[in-house]
Image 1 (spheres, rainbow, N blue to C red):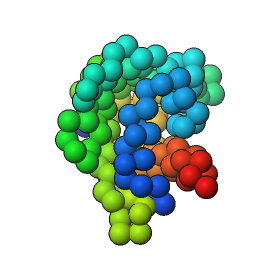
Image 2: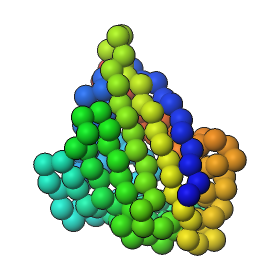
Image 3: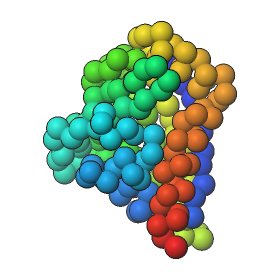
Image 4: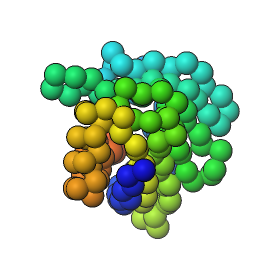
Amino acid sequence: MPRVELDLQTQVSADRVRAALLDFTDNRPAVWPGIDPSLYEVYEVHETSADIREGSRMPGTKIWAKEHYDWSAPDTVTWTVRESNFCAPGSYVSATITARDDGGSHVHVTWERTPTSLVGRFATFVIVVTRGKPVAASLRNGLSSLEKAAH
């Protein structure tokens, strides 16, 4: 399974980053602009887990995954693919969020996805070769929207 790890810094508190990752309201695509609202659907939300569908549009195609979110570990949110049109079940992304002394937070991301389609293989190739730049850019967009909302 292709794997990339990356680290992001933000002025947003660890609690606020975690809350945004776990915001399964209709506002989620606004906070995380990589999510296309037409491909977003919430199936179930529980105390420490949720089942949802998220996706993005790319030129000429759309990619989506039904994900199982788990936040039973105190500092980590993991979303694991149940079904997808671009990667295998069991593929996952996790974000471990730790508070910084200045009130901001550090986010360590582990991205492991096994592609199952041509689009998935292309996206995986780009992500691995660039050491996660598209993943980091998507997360930075969301963190940036949180930073702007805090001011």
